[in-house]
Amino acid sequence: MTESPENLSIAVWRGDDSGGGYEQFDVPARQNQTVLDVVSWIQQHTDPSLTYRFACRVGMCGSCAMMVNGEPRWTCRTHVKTVLKGNRLEVGPLRNLPVIKDLATDMDPFFDKWVASEGAHHPTRTRHDPIAPVDPTEGNRVEANEGIECINCAVCYSACDTVTGNPDYLGPAALQRAWTLFNDTKDANRGAILDAVSGSGGCHNCHSQGSCSHYCPNELNPMKAIAGLKRASATRFFRRSS
Amino acid sequence: MLDIRLYMLQRITALIMAPLTLGHIAVMIYAVQGGISAEEILSRTQGSVFWFLFYGCFVVAVSLHGAIGLRVVVHETFGVIGKTLSWFTWLVAAGLMALGLYAVFAVTL
Image 1 (cartoon, chains in turn purple, green):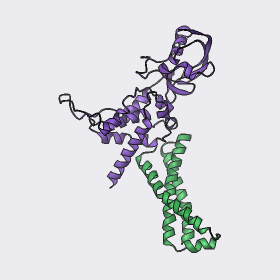
Image 2: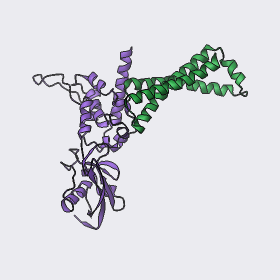
Image 3: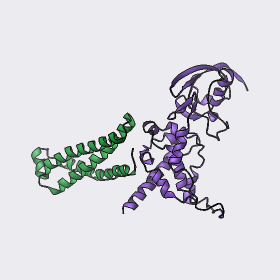
Image 4: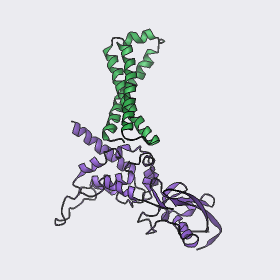
C-alpha cells in the first residue's frame, strides 16, 4: 500500500452518556483506507482506551455504524477519500442512542423496539410439520424480500429526525421488520403486527422525510415499508368501522 | 403520541377540508367580480342552511385537523407528553371550534 505524505486530522468524540467532546488525532493517510481503519489505527497506535464496536469488517454484521462528518454511515465500507473534507474527518457515536463510551452506543432501545413492533415470527406450523413451500414470485413475498437484507446497523434509526423528536417512535428498522413479517405468508398473526405498529409510537408518526431510505447502506427503503404499514392499518380501520 | 385513531381523524378531516376549500375559493372569486361588501355577503349567507352546513363542517374539520397537527409539533419540538399533551390538543380544538362556530353563527343566522 502506498503511503501519502500527509497525515489526516481526525476528530473523534470521547466521553460517555454524561458528556464529552471531540479529541484530535493525526493518522497517516493511505491510498485505500476506510473510516473503521482510521479509528482502529488510533486505537492501536495512539490511544488504546478508545472504545468502538466492530466485528465482520465487510458490511455484514451491522455493528460498526458511527456518525461521520455528522452523517450516519457503516464505517467498514466507507472509504475515507469519499467523505474527507480537506484532510479532516469528524467521527462520533450514532445519534438517537445513549452513548456507553466514546464511539460505542447502547443498542438496547433500538432492539427493544424490534420486539415492541412484533418483529418476531408467528409460526403457522410446528417443527414436526413439513416445510411450507414459498413462491418467490408471489406479490407479498416480493414485497417482503425488499426488506430482508437489513443488517440492523441502526443507521436509519440514527438518521431519523422523528426518532429525535419523539423517543417513543419505533423507528424505521423495526417498522420495516414488521412490514416484512406482515408480508410473510408463513406468519400466522398479521393482526398482532398491525396492532403493535398502530399505537402511540407506531408507524403513523412517520413524516416521510426519507432520511432512512437515503442513508440505508444496503439501499433498502424503510419509508416505503412504513407507507405500506400505514396503508394496511388504514384499510383495516375502515373494514372494522364498516 | 399519534396513534391510528388520531392519524385517521386527521386524514379524514383533510378529505373533508379539500373540497370545501376549493368551494370557498371558487365562491370568493365569483363573489368579488362586481366588488364586495358586507351587505352583499350577508344577503347570501344569512338564513342559509346550505352555507351554515358548508362552513360549519369546515370549522369542525379545521379544528380537529389543526389541533392534531399542533399536537405533533408541540410534542416533537418541546417534548410535551402525557395528559398535558392531551389537554393541549383538546383545548386547541375547542378554541378553534368556538371561534369558528361563533363566526359561522354570526353570518348565517
